[in-house]
Image (cartoon, rainbow, N blue to C red; front, top):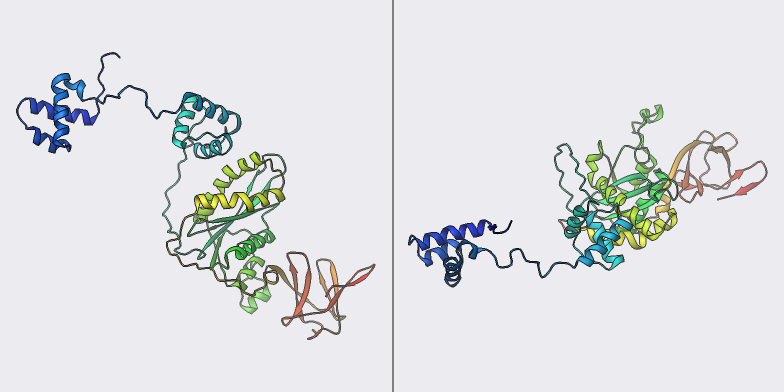
Length: 391
C-alpha cells in the first residue's frame, strides 16, 4: 500500500531513542552508547530523523531490487531443467547436478525457494519417536555398521537387487557393492573389500539376518561340546579377531540405515544419469566415481586420529572368507558333500580313519578342499562318467 512505512526492530529502537533526544531527555553521546554506534553515526541518524521524521530511519535500499539478485533468465533455466531431469531430486542434490551438468551455479536454499514458489517441490516431513543418542566411536575402524538394502536400484531397467553397505561408525566413511541377494557370500565379499582397502576392523555391527549371524538352536553335538552355533560369517570374523555384534532394532545401527537413504536418493539418480543398467557396470561406477565423491562429501575426521584397523599382513583372506562344514569319513574313505562324492587318496598325510570328521572348505571362487587336523588332504571327486583329481 502506498505511503505505508515498513520498520524493523532496529528502526523502531532508533525512532524511540531519537524521540528522546529531540525531547531533550537524552544526549547524542548517550544515544550512541544505547544504539551501539559511533558518535558520528548517531549524528547522521539524528539529522535524518530531524529532517524526514521516522521515514528517514528506514534503509535507503528498502523496496529496491538487490544488485546481487540472480537474473530471471537463470532462474527460468534452473526451474525448467529441474522439471525435465531432476524432478524427484531434493534441492541440495539438484543444485549440485545443475552446477555439474547445466553450468548453473545456485545455492540449495535459493533453489528451494524457487521450487516452492513454482509449486514443483515440497518438503517431506516425518515424525520419529524419541530415541536416546549413542555417541560415535572415537577411532576409525573401531566399529563398522553392516547391512543390506533391497531396492529397485535401476528403476525397472532390470530386476531388483541388494546393496551390501558398510559404514564406519566414527567417520561415516562408506563402502558398498551390489549383489543379486543379501547372502553370506555377498557379506564376505564386501567385508573382504573393506579389509583390503583399510585393514581389519575391531567389530562389526549387523542385524540378526542369516547372512550375518546364526539364529538356530545348538545341535546335540554342540551342546555336549559346550559351544554356541556360529554362522559362516561369524566363523570368518572370529578367525580375524573381529567381534560380531547383532543389533536388536534398525535404529540401533542408524548410521548405516540413514546411509541407505542417501544411496536410495542419490545413487539411483546417478545410475539413471549415467545410463547404467547392470550390476557389473554399477559396481565399477561405485568404485571409481560414486564412493570417492560421496565419502569426500559426507565423511568427517574421527574424534581420535589413531586408526584402529589391524594391518592384514600375510593373512590369506581367501582361506578365511569361505564356507566350512564337517563331514564323516566312510569305511571306503569317501566323503559326501552336497550330492558330490570325494575319494580321499592314500598318500594324504595324516590319513583320517573311517568315522573321523574332516572339514570341507568351499572358497568364494567355488573351489573345494578337504582338511584333517589342519592339514590339506589329497582327494579326487568320484563321478559316474569320469574321475578328476582336484587336490
